[in-house]
Structure formats: structure tokens, C-alpha cells
Image 1 (tube, rainbow over the protein chains, first blue to last red):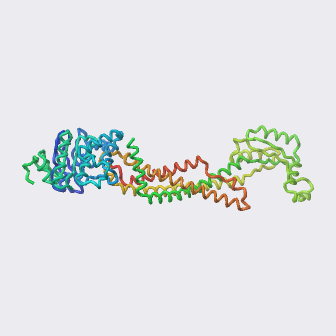
Image 2: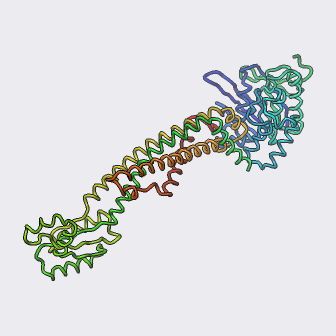
Image 3: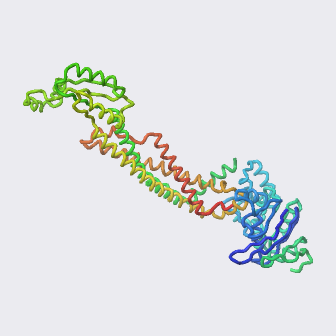
Length: 226
Length: 299
């Protein structure tokens, strides 16, 4: 599903990623751990074609992301759901309209949009808030709406960059459960976080980055000390 | 269809969000384009006057004195056979004198002192419709001057030359002013679009990340630019029409110019439509400039 081969990236001589080689299989749930500045966000940005590696190759579903033409990048992104720490919901649009955006840009039919948005909102548990503005939602609900937007077009991969950064431990657990449910339906999920508490909630593969370098892999779950 | 509705709604939202800027942009664009319109209006009217003069052009072929009737008839036959001649009227010396007396009755005594009728016989030639251009008439006049029995060839060349020169200047000024002010209109609209882009930068970023194509992101701003351009140019036509009617009223009330108000005309519908279309193109150009500067569409 996702393959990185000797990927390196620097910004003004500051190394963000160094000779990274890893593979994430279809349907996997992977935690991408590391402190701030470890290179997690850079890696996610590369996966969606927002950044290009200085060296190495990145493959997404067999396509070399680094060699995509600019005009092909939007079509790659339509296969990837992205969840942000700050939710990035548009304040002047309702929850429904926010979640519908990925379908609108793909020129889906009105009936399709109505059906898929309702399904996505139901899946994340905020269907009853669909007509409200994002500002009237709690932070947990806003993140759920953001996740609904990320899954509404049935992506093959879900990338989440610090999705629980603004949430309390209780909401964090709820959101992680939601990711597990989405993963159980076959979507590959990659969650980048620096929060060790998240690692304790996920008994899955953990990839750790330290100053852009890949550390030995671990397994998350109850046994991990927080 | 929802995506189409979305694009238009976003453009409308842009216009509404920056309401004051939108109104200022439309009004400024309108006055800028109205300046271009003044030149266009002057050009169209002078062109019309030139065409009218051209249509009405008469060439007078004055004959030498004491030509025999045979020579005059030969000359008439030659001129009639010329494909450039549309109509021909012979004015004898006596007819010329009679016309002079009729037109200037108080001055007719001036000729009596001379004894012999000094006015020459002439042919008044109306060029054929396809040969009424200044160049064609010039060439024809030069040719006729060399014919035996022709003393002089005369037509309202000075008037036409002066008008053609004026038209060339107006044309040049209209193009120069048009280019400069069009650039100003592009800048005005471009700045308005830039404000909208800045206000919605977060939305643009989100759209990019969820897979919106460059065209999808740009279209609302192109629509916004087009709307600003169309509104600005339409308003400028309104301002021009108002100014034109006031001018017509004023000029009609001045005795010396009475009658001119019926000769001048506002821009024809086809030019008005083209003017609005140009406004739309300038608006879209403004959007393009701003989108490029804003760096939207980096993939």
C-alpha cells in the first residue's frame, strides 16, 4: 500500500527525514510516534504529494508519488483521507457542507453526496449536528466531523496528523476507537502522534522517528507505560 | 450539478464577504473604463462623420475655356465609360453663373464688372460606391487632371484629409489610453480578488488537501473577476450614456452647433456588448494575475 525507499528530506540543511525505508501494508493500522520535529508531519505531507523527497522514492498503491505531475496530485489525494490536529473545518459552512466538500470537488451527484455524507456523519456519531456550524460543536465533535470529511469518499488510506492533540484523554480514547472501527472496514490507517497515551490505546505496529531517523519498531497496547 | 452550484455560490460569497471592496472595485473600474469609452465614443462618431463625408463626396472636373462642343462630348463619353464614375452632371458656364447668382444674390454684381462670364464649365462627378475611398478618389483625380480639356479637378479633400488625420490621432490616443487604463482596471480587480484570496486562504488550503484540482479552486475567483469586470463595464456604459445625453442637450442649446446633436450617436449595441465582454476579459485577467501572485495551485 505505502512504500518508502531510502527517502531523505532536508530544509535549509536541517534534516527532516534521513534515509527512511519502510512499508505499510493494505489494511494496517500504524502509529507514527516521535517528538515534535521528528519528521512525522514531513512524512505525511510527502505521502499526500505536498512535499517531494530530496532523495529516494515513495510509492502509494504502486504509484511513485514523487514523480507525479502537479495535475495528478489532486487525484492521489482523493484516495487519501486526511485528519488534522486543528480540524480545519470551514467556520462559515455547516457540518454537512464541510463533510460534503471532498465529494463536491469530485463532482459527485447531489443524491450521492446526501447519502454518503449522512453515512459518514452517522459513522462518527455527529449526524444530529449536521446543520450546525463547526463553532457550535465541542472539540471532540469537531474532530469527529473532520474524520467524517476524511472518510466520506471511502479512501484507501487515512492519514491523521496529531488528531488527538487538542483533546482530553476521554475524547482521545473515543477518537482512537473510531480509527480502529474505520481500520476494521479495511482502510489503512496511519496516525502520527507524540502522545504516549495514544500508544497505550493501540495494540498495533508502532513506527518511531527521532530527528528524521527510523527507530526499531515496537508494538503498542496496554503493556506500554504512559 | 452540486459542484457547479458550489462554484457560483463561492464566487457570490466572495463578492458578499468583501462588500465594500467589491463596490469600490466596480465603481473605480467603471470610471476607468468610462475614460476609455469617451475615446471610443469620439472615435465612433468621427468615423461615422468621415463615412458620411466619404459617401457624399463629389468631384468637380473644371474644363478649360472655349472648348468645342465635340471636345466636351468626347470628354463626357470618356468619363461616363470610366468604371469609377457613378454619376455625371454637366454644368455649363451659363448654368454655373446662374447657380452663383442664385446662391450669392448680393455678390452677383462682382462678376458683372468683369464683362465676360469668368466661371468655367464643369462636370460634377459622383464616384461609384466602390471607389469612394480617399485613395481611390485621389488616384482618379490625378489621372483625370492629365486629360485634354481639363483645367482643374477639385473635391473636398482638405476636409476629408483633416478628418482622417484627426481620426488617426483619436485612434492612437484611444489605443494608448485603452491599454493603460485596461491595465489599471486589471490591477483594481486583481487587488480585490487578492483580498478575497487572502480571506479564504485556509479554505483554499483545505480544498487542495482534499483533492480539489487547480481549476476547481480557481473558477470561483475567475467568476468573481468576470462579475466585477462586467458590472464595472456596464456601469461605465451607464455613466457614458448619461454624460453623452447631457452633452447632446448642451450642444443643442448652443446656436452655432444647433443640429449637431442629431448627427452624434451613442455607441451601437454591438460595441456596447463588446465593451462589456472586454470588461469581463479584464476581470478574468485580474483574477489570473492575483491567483498567480498568490501562488495558488501548487498541486
